[in-house]
Image 1 (cartoon, rainbow, N blue to C red):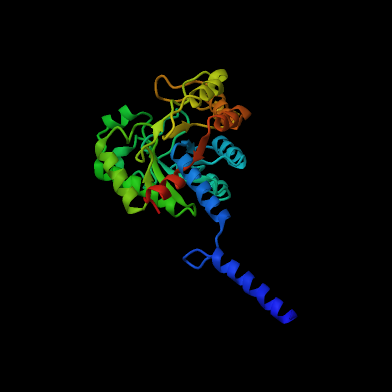
Image 2: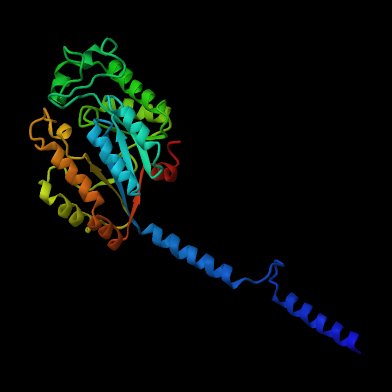
Length: 310
């Protein structure tokens, strides 16, 4: 009798289990469906997210800039760093950036050397690109001076290729190309070369992925940069990717000695670039990002999502 009762109880338990199975033969799992619903909501929310890409230019230009980029990278901020591989201090920048996976690295392609008392020249060598250099073998200080010298397109390609080659062999994982000042992007033939190199080296080009520019802090007074930045970030639209170009450095004897050859450029270079760094590191910046539900991305993210790059 006890055996019979045991058999009946077992039969009922088995029947209950069979009834609980869906047609597929898998156990019903309400938590799994809840997770699917949650993921769908997350995906829907992601489609209406405002994304901000912070791009810091001129990395490797000098020691004061490299100290600043390491300070920003240490904060954990997700951003992009455009390295001037033509500059003597690029090696220090390479050593720093290798340690920070939160930073996407690009080549800041340059055909000019704007500072009055601090110059750099072509990676390919002055004899290889004579139409791109002044009598001392340096790049010209202004775009106008370069154009007046009649630069040859084949020499432009030779030099830009040399800069990309130096970058990809530096040990850094290069993700994108962008341009230093207006010596390149103001010329359709030069931009065709940039796009050609990007395709050849499996890189993306900054401003080619639908980014909308946030007006930079560059020309704002030192004491107003942070407030102006926060105000601009508070009025971004959803469903957009925004690009904020920054120029950072620590204020030092070195950075304060820099004087731009271009008319209308800000004075007190070190103080101006320190103020941009301070704005990005400020509690107000992160509070504004969080309050406005802005997602920070870099060019590694955009390249991966677009299917371009490597």
